[in-house]
Length: 85
Image 1: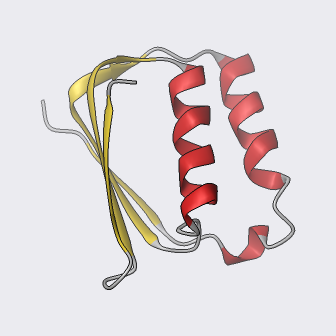
Image 2 (image 1 turned 180 degrees about the vertical axis):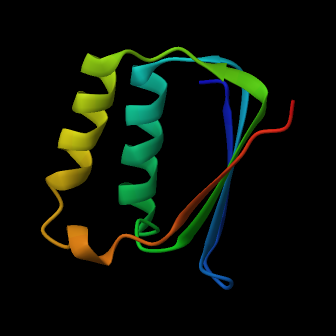
């Protein structure tokens, strides 16, 4: 997976850096990693300046469906996307 992930439980912050081409499966895998780590409600920064997201509407729907399966979906933390270029 071309996504570097750093989770700081102390700061309740997740930083993800996308490097290269990222697919819907990569994003779904990232969401699973958030859920498994207990960091879904943390603040998230996603840096896409060194990568490209190749995802279609069906892929977005699949990721959204997964995120909505969480009974605590209302407790998701804020998300900031950074893209320079």
